Length: 156
Figure: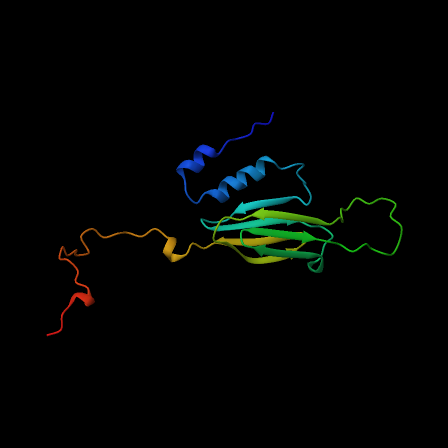
């Protein structure tokens, strides 16, 4: 059973959440979900994440990882092996493209490939200007005097 959600009431009372609503709409309209290659997403700390992807049979030269704004794209393409006729082919060697939507301020720190497991380390780094800060009460003095503009002053 599929139900369409109406985000119009939320648009009326929120500012700057367009991206979140667009992500929800996209997720709602996804067609068939490709399950290959299998992967895990692991939260390793408060602001640290790791994506582990099983890419058996692919080498570093067969993989491409790119990050554009808030999207991480992992592509894999293996050249066809020449050297015989397959009687049975059980190891998946097909091309793939897997996209991960990243939150704001998440960046890729590193990527490694070991024993057929691709590991991508991610870190969320919130800029200092966006971090919570404590505001001192009574720390600033306000003057109720009217400000005088330079143009209003008369030279004696």
